[in-house]
Length: 111
Length: 114
Image (cartoon, rainbow over all chains, first blue to last red):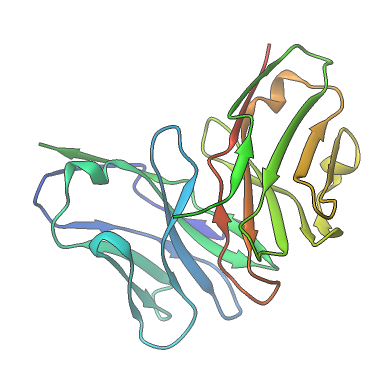
């Protein structure tokens, strides 16, 4: 069973527009959730993490995410995107000590 | 930014050849993970270590794959007899400890098996 689902394979937005990338997870325990970004020909960079507490977590480069237990979601947001945000974004669940990745969302920011 | 170092960045092998890649975790990170990312962005956990001890590994790594993290030397992942299906990006990640949840990734080694 898929533990992490990113329903949008590709998202295109204009520079300066707001962004939401969706993530749904399936896990019966306490979820430890992350968003990672992968730029072309690079490894994964950690954007932000959620363990507990305030459901809205802040990350690097103006990104934030909101955890919802009732909706089993962990959506990523940014108020105003820049062309350099174009990359692949992965929603990730830590389970049994290992990371389980969503399929990724390819974000394209148009100038 | 992550300070995990992976070498080489690119590796090209023929079928049946050995392929070896190395990883230096961030200083002070005793836990090391190896993942395989295929061209469809599917990630597969391979193995992890704490210091020199294997914590978890999948069955695949018990056959053609081997890995080690010797003290005072880079960690390594080796494929004994490469197959075309092994072509992928191999990512090494390190973590400050077993109870720490974040993993910090290196740039990866892209293996192409011809």
